[in-house]
Length: 121
Image: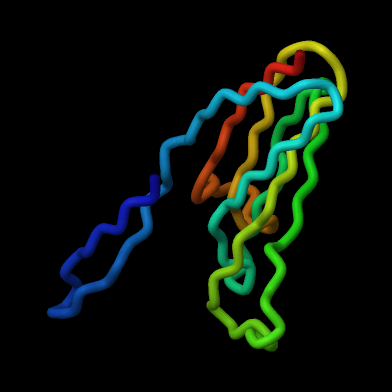
């Protein structure tokens, strides 16, 4: 969960985003079955969801949520969700770890992390 904290700074209030604790979830799939998860995001700020760890029992696909035609061109700073598709490949159990970070900021902790323990039957 991302927490917003307001800190007084020279008489002004400045929002500060703190790194979130990883969100963990258990998922059960059968071989060939898919599950879709929608994760909040804002790619125009450079933050993207990416796969940090993936077991061989599951396949992970990432795509931006489609925009309705009336939305037009995304504005800088506008939110856009990432759609994650988890598909069971073979029987077993494994972990999928997704991180929300700027790819070029290698020395910084991700702003958000999602961990899925996947059981494929």
